Each structure stands twice: as structure tokens, then as C-alpha cells.
Image 1 (cartoon, one colour):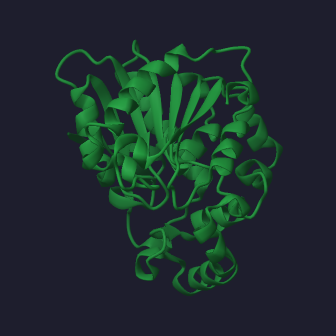
Image 2 (tube, helix red, strand yellow):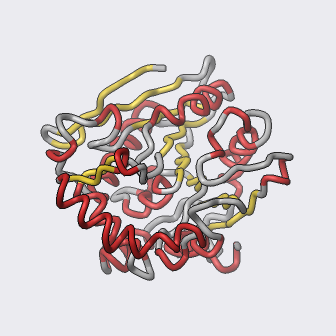
Length: 295
């Protein structure tokens, strides 16, 4: 594991880790993390994936994990800034291995932000894990019951009092910059999520994506529903796309949930599937397939 720092903007840098395979890399993979989840969470999976011949990069968005510089309340960042961080890491990974395919493995938020890339042509495919649109009416039932209190009371009040969202203290999501949580609130309250909240520019950005998208939905996901997963995939309206369901009983497991895919207990089951899916992205048709036809 090679720890690095990448400058994105003046005075802003992100921390990343690169996991090199022993031989010549078969492809480059950038892991885009979920909201409030440090890159450390993906280390075991990234190391294993490198052992399968991939050059793997993980990173922390600005204001998160090892990318946090100073107190959280001083961080000036929103989700569009995080998309720029993501793209900077993608560009660095592409430059390091220009002749090989580059795939994104996006966990939750990490599969939402690629629609906001300025240069999606750098990417050869997206494997989406446990990701959905985030619109609150499409949340899983247990989460949906919490939404009125969370978005209309807790988030505005706590963010105003602390100057950021103190998720670790409240045991909700994680510590997040004020700009991130308040923008995410707007997204989650809009029926078409990021595209509806940000307007025509965001819709056009998603429409420019042509790389294939394969979305894996966990049937026991406590946050995302199948409907929400389809809604996210449909934002990538010009990309060849497919949604696949994974149930715990398919792999003789008691539970997978929103975060389980990357746990070591699935080294023999879900992780090999990720390799097959990443390689299979190249086999999805690149033209002439709509989301509705592919699902």
C-alpha cells in the first residue's frame, strides 16, 4: 500500500492509497467511497483486488478521513467539490496506467458522483454497489420513517449549532462539512435527486456518460431499495446499464446489507463476483441500449 497526497485545488489536497499488483496490471480500479465512510474501510478489499491483478486506488474526499485539514467546521466543501476530488483521483490513476482500462467501483455515493464528472471519457465502466438515488420516498422503510426528523429537524439544527454535521457524536452517517450535508439534504428531498436539485447542467452531465454501468442491489439493504437503485441508474440515461439483485441466501449468508459487500467474510463469495463483474463491464453493449431495455 502506497500512501500519497494529491493536490486538487489551491490549498486543497486529498489523501489516497495505491495498491499495486505483483505483475503487470490488467486494469486500474478507483474505489469511490460511501458518504461518511473513510477509505480505510476498503483496505482489505483493495488489497485482495490488487492480488487479482488490478491496480487499485482508494481515497478520502476533502474534509474526510486523512484528507481532513484543520477543524471540520472550517471545511468549505460540497458534493460538487467531492466530485472534483473523485475526478482528480481518476485522472491520476489514468495517467499512471494510460494503456489499461479504468473502472470505477462506487459504493453508495461513490456510484452517484460519477454522473457529475467533467471528462467521463476517462472511465471504461462503473460497478455500483449498494447505491440508489437517495430520494427519501425511495428509501428503505426503516430509514424512511426517520426522514422527517432527520432532514427537517436534526440536520438543520445540528449543522447550525456545530458549524458542521456532527454525525459521529449523533451516531448518524459520520462527521460531514456543512456544505456537504446541506446540499445532500436538497438532493434527498428532490424526486429526481441530484439532477432535480442541481438543474439542467447536472442532467446534461449524467447524459454525457457513455461508459457501462452495472448496479448491484442487496435485497437486505437497510438504506436503499430496488426502486431507488433503478432511479439512480436511469439518471445515466445514455449509458448501457443493468441492475442485478444479490440476496444473502444466494451465498449462504445471514446478512449483507448496505455495508457488508466489502467485509472479509465475503472474500470467497462476493469479492470474486466483483472481479467477474469488473471484467464483464467491457462486454456490455456501448451503444443502442437504454436503461429500460437493459434492466
